[in-house]
Amino acid sequence: MTDTFLVLALAVIAALFAAIGQAGGAGYVAVLAVGGQAPDAIRPAALLLTLLVAGIGVLHFHRLKLLVWRDVWPFALLGVPGAVAGGMIALPAAAYRLAVALLMLAAAAQMLRTARGAASHDADALAAAPLVPAILGGGVIGVMAGITGIGGGIFVMPLVLTLRWATARRAAALAQVNNLCTAAAGFVGVGVGAAALPAALPGWALAAAAGGAAGAWIGARHLPAAALRLLLALILLASAAKLLLG
Image (cartoon, rainbow, N blue to C red; front, side):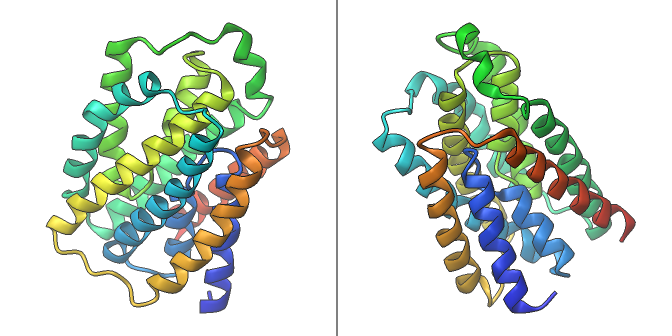
C-alpha cells in the first residue's frame, strides 16, 4: 500500500465512521495493519487518530445539545482506567492480529444488527442506562480499547441501541465521548510502555481530521442510511479476513 493511498484510505475511513457517530478506530487499525505497519506503531497511531476524530465529533454533538452526562459517566467510570490498563498490555504480533481480527468480526456483526434502522428503537428507549451493567460494560470495553487501539464507542453504540438504553442520536453522541475517553486513556497506557510514534503520523492526522470533520458534519444532523452501516461492516469483514489469512 503506497503512502498516498494510505492517507486517502484513512481520510475515507474517518469520514464514513464519523457519519455514524464513530471515530474510526477499527478502520484505522485495519488500514494500518493491511498497510504493513507493526503493532507497536499501529496502536498509538490508531489511538491518536481516534482521539482526534472523536474530539471533532463530540464538538458537533455538543453544539446540537445531544450530549447527556448521565449517558456518559457510567461507561467512563471503569472504562477510562480499563483503557489505561489495556494500553499497558503489549501482545505479540501474531496474537495482536488475531485479537484485532476477532474484535473486527464482532464489530461488523454489531454494525449489521443495527443496519436496519436504529432510529426505529427510539420510541422504546430508556431515559438512562441501568447503572451497574453500564459501569461493568464500560470497564470491559475500556480494556479492549486499550489493548487493540480501537475506540470503545464502536462497541458501546450497538450495545446501547440493542438494549434500548438511549435514542439513536444520544447513542451516537455517547459513542463519540466514549471513543474520546478510551482513546486518551489507552494512549496514556501505551505511553507508559514507551511506544514510538510513526514518522508519517502528522500526515495521517491531517487526513483523518479532514475526513472526520466532513463525516461528523453530516452525521450530527441526520443518521445515515442503512447502506452506510452495511458498507462499514463489509470493510471490517474484509480487513478481518486479511488479518486472519495474512
